[in-house]
Amino acid sequence: MNARSETPAPYGPPAAPEAERWMREALALAHAAQDRGEVPVGAVVVRDGAIVGRGGNAPIAANDPTAHAEIAALRSAAAALGNYRLPDCDLYVTLEPCAMCAGAIMHARVRRLVFGARDPKTGACGSVIDLFAEARLNHHTRVTGELLATECGALLSAFFAARRANA
Ligand SMILES: [Zn+2]
Image (cartoon, rainbow, N blue to C red):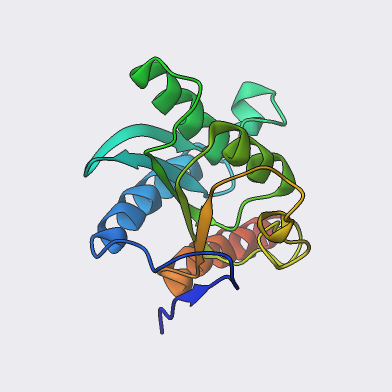
């Protein structure tokens, strides 16, 4: 099942009808990250029905602990649009963002965040902590979780199972 779950109020209506299409684009970037030996996570930023930013997880190759897929996609979109704020943009990512990425998403003023699999170890959208539910933080992002969660999660599970087998 690819059930969707909306984070509790005050967050808004479900993602757009074409949301699965964008998540599949993020999944393709996750596969590409895996091919480079990185943990398979991918993200896209969408504005007015078009992708304006793409990112794949790359901390190992970049020697950069901040090189998460969301950060890369936000940087790519902000550069493309010439604006450090992305208020008309939606971010699709295959894995529930961590606290660092949740902070970056808030700073960018992303309109909507749609994520795939939940991350019970570092997820900052309700799994470990819910930064988007913190009313004292000034942000405008609505959150939709668990879109294509099974596919997004299976990719990660297979990656870690293979890594354990090779260890
Ligand atoms: Zn992150």
